[in-house]
Structures are given as structure tokens and as C-alpha cells.
Length: 300
Image 1 (tube, rainbow, N blue to C red):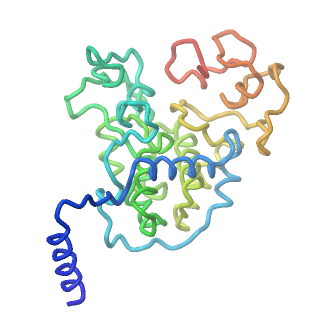
Image 2 (image 1 turned 180 degrees about the vertical axis):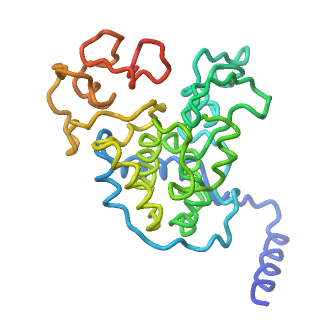
Image 3 (image 1 turned 60 degrees about the horizontal axis):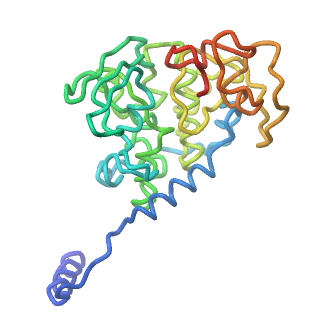
């Protein structure tokens, strides 16, 4: 009854407001600020994902009551204000040989995906609807039940459009995953599982989400198979295969510069910190695992 009265009062107020402009609940500035705060709270690139996981709160799953995709704001908003929507930003990042709509440097119409979830090579054509999806690595339903239910819309929109939480993947694999967490779904491509879980850990840490006990334990089991697996750098494209143990500093310092390691760099963050990026095949510190698109140049 109270809800009905409140609705009637709101309707009356609107009817007497004339042409008064009502400000939207969520503004682009609010979303951009929420995204900035999440990036500021993200773990240091190159830090061991297992160490970051150990810092995440472990709690029970909150009810899914009230969850709706619309509660996460405009789909594929231009949060970084580069003039392109998030979906096309991710396609341009993750595809190779991509082509854009004539007259546009945003709209991706074709390209090739080295699918991280299945290991298959997939040809993407805009509008086919059944080849490539953009997956939320931490599913939005999972996010809702591990903290996002209490956020405002700006913060949820920032999560839904965070490049760290988005990957171009095989359509069918994404449908199989649904809203599963690490305890219920992992990629078929076993060589990508460590990278996948490390990405989930980075997203949860940056945005202040918790993990359930089952989710935590499943993540820990995966990361035990790849000691030192680092969390990815912001906006990093997927890279296949387990990483070498990370020697990147975890205190935010750049560490030694311009001196390549005796073996491959553990990741692109370490290569950039050493002033060696971009790397070309055959360069000191080169590793095929850093060349996600297989073009012979890594850490561009």
C-alpha cells in the first residue's frame, strides 16, 4: 500500500511539473568516475593471482532477487569516451585481421578470433549472431550475488563495460557457461584456465566483489597448477597457455629497466617495466605466450 501511495504521489508531482527537466539517475560522468575508481583499486599488473585471491572476502551467495541485466545500465556504453561502444572496442582488441565499416574506425564488421575458451579459430562477420559473443568473465548475475546488488547503477555499468571483464569468445561456449562461476564452469581449453581464473580474480578485486567458498576453492585449485600466474594488466587481450612464475615487483615499482631477463619475460607487464616492449619474435625476453594474436609482435 505504501508503495502504491508513493507511486501516485510521484505521478502527481510529474503532472504538476510542466516542462521541468528531470536529471537521469546515472550520468556518463558518474559511470566514468566509477570505472576510474575500479581501475585505481585493481591489483598491480603482474602480481600473483593466488596472492590476490587470498585477499578476497569469502562470503555466502546473496539472493538473486531483483537481478536484471537492465540494472547494469546501458549495454555497451562508451565508458572510456573514445567514441566507440564497448562491444566494438573489445572486438577490435581481441580479433585479428579485423575490418571496419566503411567510414567508421569503430564498427568491426569482420575479423578472425583465436577463441580462448575452445582453442578454435572462428571467422567473425557482423550480424551473423552465432559465431562470436562478448562474455562477461565474471557473469553479471554472479556479480549481483557477490556484492553488486548493493551498488548504484553507475558502479554496475562500469563493471558491465570493464574491458578486464570482457572477452570475445565462441558463441556456443559462452552459452554453455551461462552465469556460472569457477566452481561450475571452466573453459574447455585447459591451457587458458589459469589466465581465465586470474582475470576473474582481478575483476573481483578491482570492483570489490567477494567470492563464495566453493568459488574460492575452485579458483585456488586452478591456480595451484600454475604457481606465479599473474593477474593481467588493465585492458589486456587474452593470451594462451599458463604463464611462467611472475618476477614482476608487487609494490607498484617499475623495478630494473632496460635489462632483459636471461629467459622470457613472465608477462607483458614485466616487459613494459623493463622498457623492452614491444617485443618481436627473436628478441631477448620473447615468449610466444605473450603474442596473443600470433603476428610476431607482443606487448604492443
